[in-house]
Amino acid sequence: MRFSQIASACLAACTLTSAAVVPAEIEKRATSTTSRVADAACTNGPSSRACWKNGYSIATDFDQKFPTTGKTVSQSLTLTNGTCNPDGNGQRLCLLVNGVYPGPTIRAAWGDTLSVTVTNNMQDNGTSIHWHGVRQFNSPGSDGVNGITECPLAPGQTKTYTFKVTQFGTSWYHAHYSSQYGDGVIGPIVFDGPAAANYDEDLGPYVLSDWYYRTAYQINSLASINLAAGGPPPNADNILINGTNKNKNGGGSYNQVKIASGKKYRLRLINMSVDNYIRVSLDNHALQVMTSDFIPVKPFYVNTLLIGIGQRYDVVINANQTAGNYWFRANVATDCLSGNNFYGRAVWSYSSVTAGTPTSTAYTDGQGCIEPSQAAPYWVQPVPSGSFQQSISALDVGLTKAQIVPNGDAIIVWAINTSSINLMWDRPTLKYLMEGNTSYPTAYNVVPTVNSGSWNYVVVQMLPQTPPVPHPFHLHGHDFFLLGQGSGTFNAGSASLNWATPPRRDTATVPGGGWLFIAFNSNNPGTWLMHCHIAWHVSEGLGMQFLESPSQIQLPDQGQFQSQCKAWEDYYSTAYWKKDDSGI
Image (tube, rainbow, N blue to C red; front, side, top):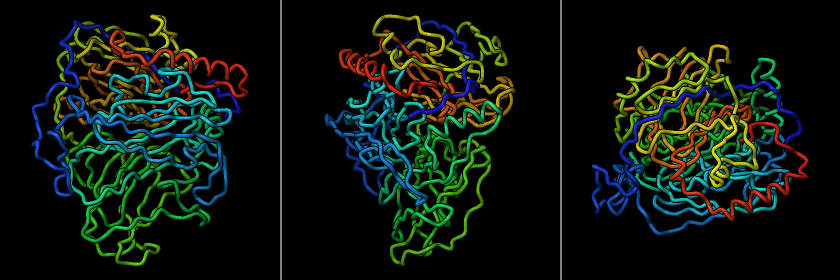
């Protein structure tokens, strides 16, 4: 429910350059094989988590092939207005999923079909639900981005999102309707499958979220006003761990976890914040990291772990310390210019002792607002650099006008602070495709990708006049290869780039005042949003969308699509609160 006009200052988006290419070989489809084939007799268990079933294992790159179980997992989510008091500070307006905050966990297995029916019973709010990091292979209409893949779901309306679970690991769902998810429309996702490290028990999702005592829409408006004056957004008031914490005055309660000596535990860390980078640790216990976002990595150990907004890490914790009570710490990452008036704590207790207030000592917090350099991909896949190296000399990333780079694959430069994405809720991009209309409004920031099987190289560059704030960028419809990050202006000649073994994930940081260089293959036809995951920034327009292989896009059922848009138009014509930001 909006109640103020977003300030006219714009923080975002893009100068775009795209190069046409010679048609390439059609990419490997989901039916293709991989050179690393699992033992058909391999069974998943505490000492063999790398195994799965039917010849699939951790060795299987799920972009190349995935199982089909024939099973459909169905779940229903009902969104309502309500109140909540997660840290004891007092009741405030919340938007709840099935009456709770955070919402219930959605769980399915690798190869299942997932069918989630969403009913919008909120007052004065449209919505759309995005399944963060989910590839949506051949199902772009279920990506859940109003203004791109659908019209918003009007109050009183229901939509069923259906898609194949082609990945395994941990993620989350959230509203993609302005900053709505900051008021509670969030929940975890678990896709069961193999793992890169062994463990005895799965403790499930561990949700980290910043918390404000005012509503997300109020904070969004204040952030816009502050931005116009050159200032930062308001600080968050607390950090919640699985939806709870004590507040700075002592009220509320800690999340509590019991562990048994000698066992190893999988913990699925998810940062569902709207603004805060969060650094986590468990006193006296190292974290063995085995995934970054959905992607398995070669396991490595850290004492503290930085998690950007939208990012996930699955870790294994070995209960091998002296039995006692230990603090799990979730601190705001001030080196990322995130602000919070308090900190997150949870109590982890060995089962052989009485739970109580820990006296354990914290690790020294790490520094540097960047993803861990140790996160080497389990699936080594070099990214071809030839066409990029041949063409980059023709590209000046300091320019703020469109440039065409001849030959090779696509090179796209996005210079932050030159224009904003601004969508019309009743005219989503998929509607243009249904109508055969290619006259996309300039404000939609539509960028065509290259032909199927070719590579898209994307440089996200912060310009000198923009505030030097780190930005966690998320790409829909794809994982991407993180080729490099750095400060200042990108220079292909001097930048340290990893072509041979680049990390792969779906959310990564543009350092403050610097650049991010990623690549992804055109292998998933659809309309895919790329945006900063700080809610106030995408509200201001810090986003763009890739239009990939439009002639091959599998469009959603047009009858249902048009019916949803008609219901939205009928509602919106008399709605009190009107769109006053980018819409996403």
